[in-house]
Image (tube, rainbow, N blue to C red; front, side, top):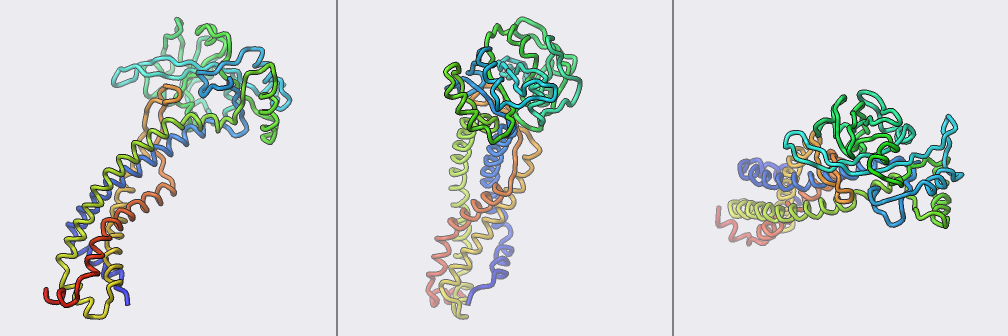
Length: 388
């Protein structure tokens, strides 16, 4: 014979104040745990959606970022003319030769400098990234000192509105458009004409190339050809994989820091739940004796108190998850450890994060209630009935 769950829930409701305080402590820990997972998920989604599955990035062998990479003009021509590279509607090759440089801009609000990526590309570069759409203004003209800026840049840095002027590489650059990259990493970049930027920064080689393959299934052959060509010192990666790798260092840092804080806070919250359950056992000795006298076995008593602790943990989990879900309306900006550039992304709540969060809160509740539940189950029925 087991104790009804409704009876267990009513016990929590009877001690509303104690239940609310304990659940609140658990909710704060759950909030930290969930926001860390949401932050990491937002970072990965931002960088993964930066790439297209059919696109391939060519970089110098050993380079981990575009800034570290270099592809000379001869190598770029060899890669561009490979048979696996798709052709465009106008007969041009679907290949974008790009240069990537870091510049420093002043943030709005605190007026402090921050590194920003500026990408030299061409019209074909926009065609290769269908997620990038002009939101305001127009595309920069080839051969000009015009630039377009990502939506995150336009909202956070001075001089980046349409008509604004930025000075870098000893030249003045005019903002003629703002683009929306669908929440990808491109939203934190500035784009301009590749030839003009290379001249201004005195670059003789491109940083990377982005190409569209005729068929995604040709990737392995294309990679093998590039790797074995003695004229090339380059390697290729799928664009999604390349940008996903950019999140590795920052993702590891966020995860380690967040999990460390969650573990420290969870110890305090679990102890709080344990104290609450011990107090519940002490105040309900007579009730426990009555239940035993009515025929409920030790196992039923143990289950009842564990279920009570589990419900307490889940209550804290639901509250904490509800608070964490509000973070989806906020954005987060930090320095990408791989590129040392400013990167903005949003908190992302997924079903998997919700399940992990509720499981975490349930585990805290059960751990906090286990010893008190064992104590309640081990009470001698005679001693318990004396308290009546």
